[in-house]
Length: 302
Image 1 (cartoon, rainbow, N blue to C red):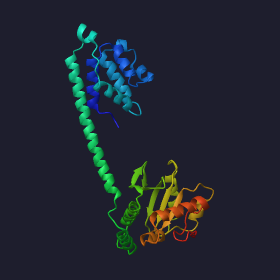
Image 2 (tube, rainbow, N blue to C red; image 1 turned 90 degrees about the vertical axis):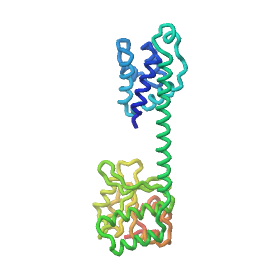
Image 3 (tube, rainbow, N blue to C red; image 1 turned 120 degrees about the vertical axis):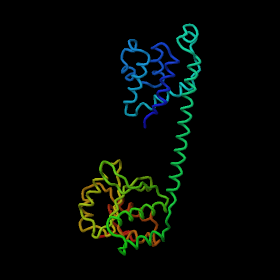
Image 4 (cartoon, one colour; image 1 turned 180 degrees about the vertical axis):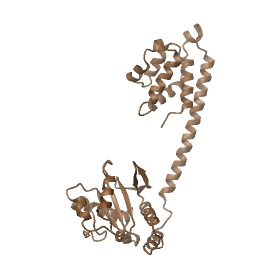
């Protein structure tokens, strides 16, 4: 997030109209969290004009990884609350004009107020959308009917996978679980994520006409690797091929839970809640090393 350029320009104008000595300008930067390395980047400020000192510091801050947001905000607060007009430079030497300085401060305050109002409106809109997203638009019977229609082949091709993703998201919403919609990161397609019991689980949703083989499982495992405390839920409607489970867990850290169409059916039928199903599967993986169990009986599949 970059600091607004119009506010930076107004801050620059304020500094020039409030501070005359070059040393005072540098001292202002120091008093507003600019580090010694930031100050050093200015160079010999005594040989520079006042505008160049400010421009050099602003450019230095903008190049930092955090784009100097903390320092710019500190300077902004200092300037809009400014009350000291050094009589030596304003009255005696008349290098600075108090009326001009006050107008600059007033202009900066107006820009800040407009920015704050815009941020508040954006936050309200974001909160409204987040609130709407938490309330599912489908009931459990609706989701069951949609799932059955997929089983009946009323939808074909890639659309089935997208519909499966929507069913999973809606189940999570019905269970008051936080979700993240599908996204791409570093070229990887992620079918969303579900937050359960304080942990985020990446989701892979597959609706294909055959059981998932080793390759698909390994690809998903690769997506989980490299994520902090990476965990995953692999949903395959037609289950998983022989040996895929054993090959995924043999000698490896368990990070993936397998879910198939039968598991979803018992949830959609209302025999077990979605969180209960997740809890059973996660508990089996954590306590027994089993990543593919029956959601009702708890017995290992395959």
